[in-house]
Each structure stands twice: as structure tokens, then as C-alpha cells.
Length: 323
Ligand SMILES: Nc1ncnc2c1ncn2[C@@H]1O[C@H](COP(=O)(O)OP(=O)(O)OP(=O)(O)O)[C@@H](O)[C@H]1O
Ligand SMILES: [Mg+2]
Image (cartoon, rainbow, N blue to C red; front, side):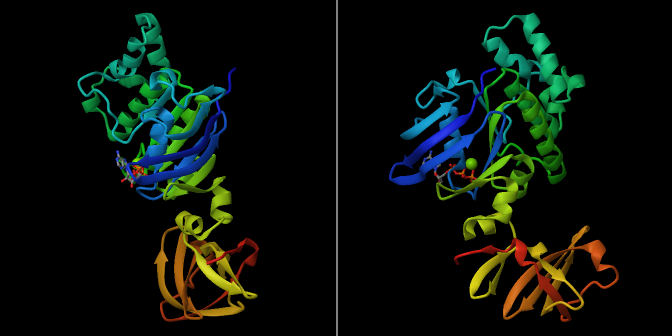
């Protein structure tokens, strides 16, 4: 089997005078799904379009395996892109939409039918082959879009915020579907999103980008628990900044632990019951801190606004930070 790593090396890009990507280095190993995460306008789509070949590379190189695709025609790259707008043909059936790419590639009808059936099973739409797109739910349409991308046996899968049109529940179930399908097909993928939770749930590794610069690449745990700078720390989740022995540390909300005989004492500002977790904001030394507490551990004694709350700080997971 040929292994296809995606290697993006020293890519910079300008729109006119406006530099939107700076010396981007990113590798996705064969079979890996790497999330490209960052705020709106940071350059995610631009990078993905360069990888797909939908735009000319100005500086740097892109390899798929040992194939230099930097200036290769997009049709020869064997990369497919899945968007948030599914770009399906509404007047065709599910089966026709999926087999379209195979027809363009000149496959015989028998081969096409066989492959469509196979891929419909993968995305769990076996019974929907003859339905029109307009008769499908948003989640089903997204599965068809995924099927249409997969049916041509791509080497590389590129996702640009594919779930942002779906409601939250569906997004959560679809992200696991996408991960399962990508793993089963053993295709290398890059998944663009601005949603940190989606990135953490779907990706093997996350690349966090700000203003066209990759800030950190690491496993979901690494970037959440060991952020290299304040941008990554804040983008990945709630942060508390605490001085300790003359240094500033970042502590996540679960690093503050209520305790009856705790060393520290703060004043409760507000309490949010969130089901399995309860989020408590306290004022301590003139600063607001946020703690996440498993609701089950609170029992009957849910803290109230204005009350004192004693707590401990778990410095084991604290990260020294320059602010
Ligand atoms: N065709 C274009 N011409 C000029 N500027 C562009 C063009 N496309 C994008 N830009 C600018 O380049 C920057 C990066 O855009 P890009 O679409 O890559 O961001 P993004 O990270 O995908 O954002 P979003 O999360 O909102 O989709 C933005 O400032 C944008 O305004
Ligand atoms: Mg975008």
C-alpha cells in the first residue's frame, strides 16, 4: 500500500498586499485526521484551498506522499473537499449524486452501481439510494456529500467546516461519523473548524492558527493542557491566571477544587448548573476565577452567590505562562 502523508512546507500567501499565511509548516501522517483550528479570517480556508489546488501556491511546497503537488492540476491530486454547503444536485437522487464522479471518470455502469452500494453502506444510507436530495434531512445530506467525496477513492480528504449548517445534536453525532468513516477508509485528512470542541473530538492532532501563523500543533490533550502561549490557552478553553512563587500560571477550571478545609478562600460570584458539571465563578485576590466541579461531588451543598468558598489549587497541571 502507498502511504500518503500530507506535507505542507513553508507556505506563505498574499491577497494583494495582505499577507494571510506566513511560513506554514504542517504534516498530516497517513491515516491521520488533523484539525486546523483558528478564529474567523485567520487563513484556514486559504490554506485548504492551496492544498486542494483550487488556488495557485505563491511560496512554499505541498507534497502528498512523495508526489510534489505544489503546482499540480487539482484533478490529478486525488484530493476531495467537503464543504458546509453540500453542493449536491437537488434534482438528482442520492445514488445519482454519488455516482456522478464515477461517471465523469468513465467507470462502467456495473462498477458504478457496485461502488455506490458499498459507499452507501459506509455512510449508513443503504435505504436512501433512490431518494431525491430535497427529501433528506441536513444530516443525511451531509452524509451524501461525504459519500460523494469518498466514492472516488481519494488519497486526501479536506473538510472546510462541514458541520456548521447542522444543529448541535446532529453536529455532535456527525463528527463521530466522520471520524469513523475517515478511519475506516484510512485516508489522510485535514479538517478546518473554528470550534475547539469539534476539533478536540474529531482530530488526532490539532494545529492552532492565528493571523496566518501556526501557533502550536499537538494532540487535543497537549494543546489543551500544555498550551505554548496565551493565544492557544484561551482559544482552547477557559483559563485562570494565578501567581505562585513569583510566576504566573495558567490553571484550567478543573484545577480549582472546592474543599471544606481548603487553603484558599474566595467569594462566590455566580453559579451555573450545567448538568454533569457545575461552573462556579469566584472572586479571589481581586480577580475572577472559574472552577468546574462535577455536580455529583457537590451533593446538597451547592455554593450560593455571596458565600465564601474554600478551595485548593492543583498546581500539578498548572502551566507557567508569560503574559
Ligand atoms: N479572494 C480573496 N481576496 C482577498 N482577500 C481574501 C480572499 N479570500 C480571503 N481573503 C482574506 O484572507 C483572510 C483569510 O481568509 P480565509 O477565508 O482563509 O479565513 P478563514 O480562517 O477560513 O475564516 P472563516 O473561519 O471565517 O471561514 C481574511 O482576512 C480574508 O478577508
Ligand atoms: Mg473559512
